[in-house]
Length: 126
Image (cartoon, rainbow, N blue to C red; front, side, top):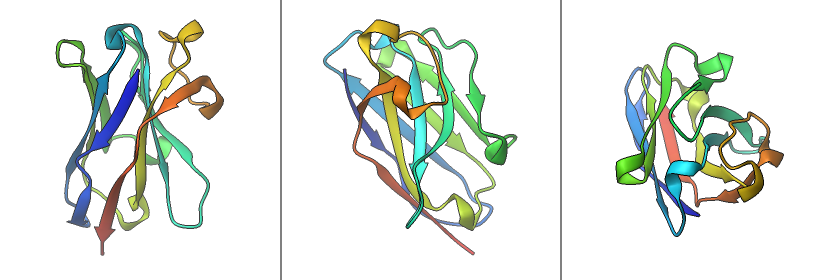
């Protein structure tokens, strides 16, 4: 499955953005989806993940209560709703899907994910 993230942009602190992850080339509805981010000079880190059927959505503690992951299998898309954005959320955001062998399972570990889309830049100004 091929993925493409979109929806990034420049927003003031306290604002909101909704990122989209569009999928093609595979049975999207059988794949878990993860969101990761990488700030300038930082390592890529886990943000959120959701199982193939929309079950067990989870987010990292640093964004809990502000970010939410969801998916619409009918549209071959996943989303990351980001509210009350902070300058420390500034990063390139990536969506990813696991390898075919464990494609339905969600994980917070990058090694679990085999397909990565091009990232979308989110910049939060103070």
